[in-house]
Structure formats: structure tokens, C-alpha cells
Image (cartoon, rainbow, N blue to C red; front, side, top):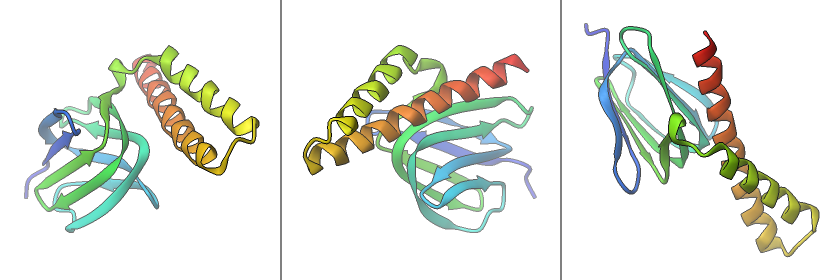
Length: 141
């Protein structure tokens, strides 16, 4: 039995990551999901959040996904994301500005459609900021 599982993270634009990993943690719609080698097959939807990839040597890579699906097979994890960005590449200033803009729309009590869109943007901005925080915590270790 192998101690690794193949992981592919793909956005609508390109492949972000591909390689053998010790395990993967994704932000599923129902909560965090840890995926290890020989995991039972499953498909789940992803909410905006982080994907943590732990390499065989223990090093972690953190990614932001804006939603999508994860498909798990015993030897393969595929994350198909609407948007996927390495946490290192997230623009913290832009994410904070997006968060503040969404909060302003919510406070203004705009039309329902605006509120729904603002809530989605707020969730995405908060998830990006969370990915940056996770990366910073990891780098401090």
C-alpha cells in the first residue's frame, strides 16, 4: 500500500498543482474533508476556502479555491475549481478591498440580488484572507 496519493488541482484557466502528496484537506460544503491514500471514492462540492496539500516530506502548500468539486479515488484526488490560486499569489490588499466593498453593499440594504452577490463576494474575499493567514502561520513555524 502506497503512502501517497496523486493530487491534481485545476482551475477553469489552468492546472495549478499536480503531484504525489501525503494527504489533502479541502473546504467541502459540509465542512473540512481530509483525504488520505486509499480513501473511499466520493464526489463533493467545495465552498470558497482553502485546500491544504501536505507533501510526503511534511511540507505544506496552501491554495485558495472559489468553489467547485472534488473527486476522490483511492489513488487520485482531483480538485476542479472555478478559481484556484496559490496562497502565495493572492493579493492581500485586493482581497481586503473586496471584503470591504461587499460589506458596504450589505450595510446599504441594497436589492436582494445585490445582497446575494455581495454575500458571495464577501465569502470569497474572507476565504482568500483566511488562505493568506494560514500561509503566514505556516511560514512562522
